[in-house]
Image (cartoon, rainbow, N blue to C red; front, side):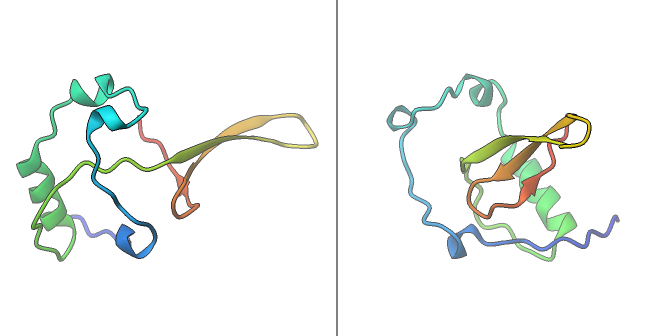
Length: 94
C-alpha cells in the first residue's frame, strides 16, 4: 500500500456548500455527464489511501482561477490554477 502524507480539508470549515439542481447552475455539464462516477471505486480508493470510512459521495463543484504568470526578465509565462475556496495551487494531472 502506498502511504501519502496529505492533509484532508473539510470544505465545510471553509465555505458553505449548498445543494442545487443542474439547471440552476451556469455550467456546461456535458463533459461531466459523459463520465459516469463510479461511487464504489471512489469509496474504495478513499478508504485505502486514508484512515476514513466513507459515508456518502457527492459531486461538488467549486470555483477555480486560472492565472498566467509572466517572468519579468525573459517574458516566459506559465499557467497557474488556483482553488477558488482555499486559494491553493491545483496541480492539473492530464
